Image 1: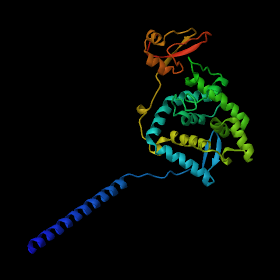
Image 2: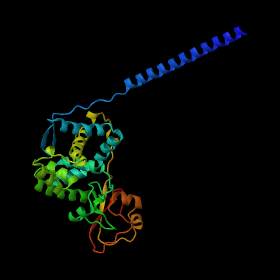
Image 3: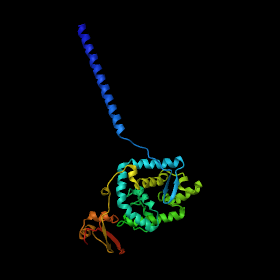
Image 4: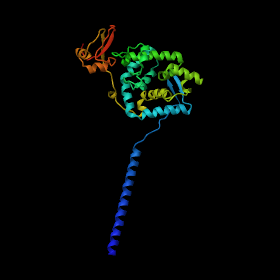
Length: 305
């Protein structure tokens, strides 16, 4: 009887020992596997330049605050790869139109990156009611000459909203004295920036103590400029065919009401979806046009009128 008890105890000890050793080996194998995986996936710090430039205005990154603010925006955007790739692809589609208008209006080319951080180059609506690629509020849109009503919203018209944004930026530059401050005012307002400058007795954006959003604003623009102007430097590889492009369009003049845009689309040889893609400023299924205003409706060039 004692022998049987001894044998059972001995076998139990062996079993427990084997189980512990097996678990130890499995744990070590898992750790080794993780070490291998970690060595194959690397995240690198981004080297910062000694200075950056926005709209011809040079900024020396000569203190820790400025370096950390730029570093933050570069890290956030470079390593948010899916979003950054969308910005690269969309910029190929929208930048040629925006660049042309900025040049015609006398606005520095760098302001195209402001549109990127405002909307991601999409016709979106913010929680506060700003709309379009340039994120213009209702009251500001009316002041800048855009038509906004239940039928038409020209904040969704890329060409018209870009010209409206240029109008605002020229006014801001005149009142604030620099393009950097004009850009910051697009977020904080002209009067808001003027008050901050007066209260803090400084004359430039980089010496201001600002709230979180406006504090990040210009550095977000700078980060987008650095990445989008040279994506390969930051590890983004693609072919020309991967980028988004606008279809060629023809403009059709309309100075009367359109009772049904779906029927109108059929007459133009397209469908309602295609009409709205090219004319997002038409926000209902009809165009009232009681004033007989002249509108330009875009139709893909492949379609005959």
